[in-house]
Image (cartoon, rainbow, N blue to C red):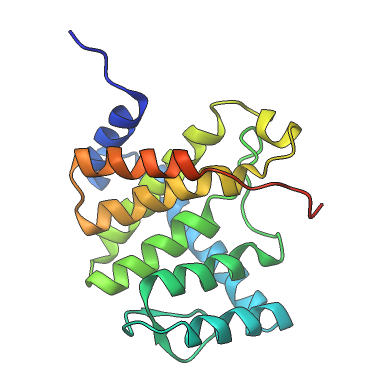
Length: 197
């Protein structure tokens, strides 16, 4: 029997994830994460940096697919993720998985909401995508608990692309093979220094 790569095991988890298979407490906690993330976005949208990222996102172009939190226009899904993720993490009041030192909502929630809106997904499907993103982000962050941060890497930036790929991939209906490739791209581009501290 051939052993599966980590990427394939995670891709299989994402494609097989179904809300009805999860404990109600996990689902409930994820809805609270979404509300917390939206609250952080709204607070940031009133700040100078928040207004700047909303304005920039509006000017990047693309189809009007997804809402900007605290903004009036719809923008391309990728632009909404960029702006809303910045808003969610901008004040640094967002959730933290302490042992992995990752902020999951600014990536998983914002990606699931923007892509979900773009594809016309149900709330249930968006919630599944959020859960997939959170789980994948935590797993990547926990590959070396505290060690990324200790070596001056920002674990949220390092693991965030994996979460975004999981959440978006779930909503776009990527196959297991397509997710494996997406995770490979994420790994090859993983970065994020914490020199700003």
